Image 1: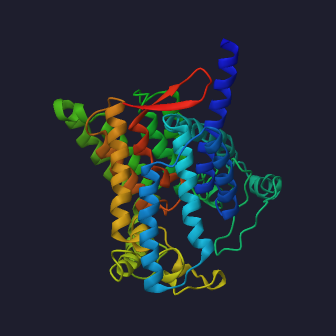
Image 2: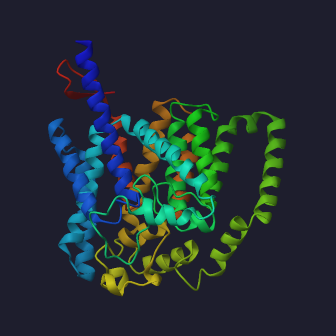
Image 3: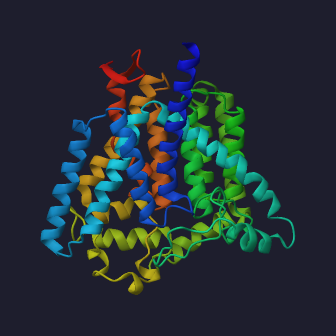
Length: 417
């Protein structure tokens, strides 16, 4: 009997790991995220498990679908350009995210950390190897071609050589930046930072094995935003001490002073930020330039945005898409695409998720504040909020409204907490 339960538990654990992987892969892993075909495949897989585990569409899902549907109807009436592929893509993404959350529930956080930790461990040998002279051709031409891409993308954005679990992005060789399996180092930084704040749920030790690996990988990304988030995380960890102990306050002042000195001395910190600000009015390739361009557009349709069908760029074709149409500021891109109504609802759901995490796992009362700041900062640096993993935040609050129970037949039922 115990063996039977153990086998079933292994099956459920593997399933949950696979489902969370689908969200991460279709959100930002270089091999998967560029083709919408993988999102569809992911949705088919999650639908199979959704039906098999006898899940149902609840009011959280219906509320989100209704809200997006209303906004997209208004967008279509205002701008036209209805496209069935784009329209259906929104709801495929939302259902993929919902179904994963509905099935995995509280294991979502643990499995996410486990996967990012695994990718981090894999990335370090590749990263160290990048310092070997002449390794670039071996990485990009041999390893990068071992696993052929099943679905080629004809979009404006060019793919990078990769081996699924690691991306041989150009800056790995020019600046020695670690992208992990994601499209660029900054994206890896986003996933690492979220893993850091989610790992804190069960492991409060900042120097745990997992945290050390995550922090080491954050350092190797050379991502300005990830470094800023790391500083915020350390401040959060010691927040009570800073409030109660004068010595800690003095140490904090010294750390801030050291940080300012490092900011002045380390080129990729100061120069990168100042350059982004300087060129903000000239190009949308900078985070600030992207924010300005999107904010100006947002003012023209603040309630409903311009949608995903192409109204923002005048319904340009993929071939006509140019670098000036590129957006990399997730916060303002979300506002311009879906307007203030969905943006407010979305960020409120993120906030509610973090509040419920703090309450359920008995974390400090200010956990949700620091975590929310972290996610908004990450969103400011990368276009993340219209991707499948982050859509999960729209549905995560629902898992705290019910408690998972397991019956004798290993099926699942729920009772209110």
